Length: 149
Image (cartoon, rainbow, N blue to C red; front, top):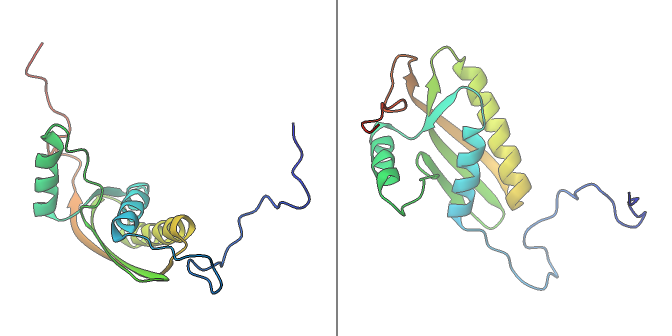
């Protein structure tokens, strides 16, 4: 087993800017990248059922059924990205029984942590709109009975 060298720390250096003075070039991060990271970080939180409002979830369900379209990870996530900062707006559906205040706090903490760690951008705000609550008896097509045997 190799020992870590004394000249190379094992911890990640934080606080470095994307576009530091004297750097050999400029790094830009697309808003789509931030949208995807924020969407994945939101879905990781217990109590979140889905992202997006009713209409965007319906279109997302249709798109997922089209071969080759892939999954829609940015539905319900909108971002504003600058050179050093990002602002994120989320539309979410929360599971019934989950305490919305706690879920929103956990989402905000996870999204800020993941976006800042992965992109290096400072997240200045995460606005969360809870558009619906998913009830346990609402199937919504999740447990489909196969028509073929």
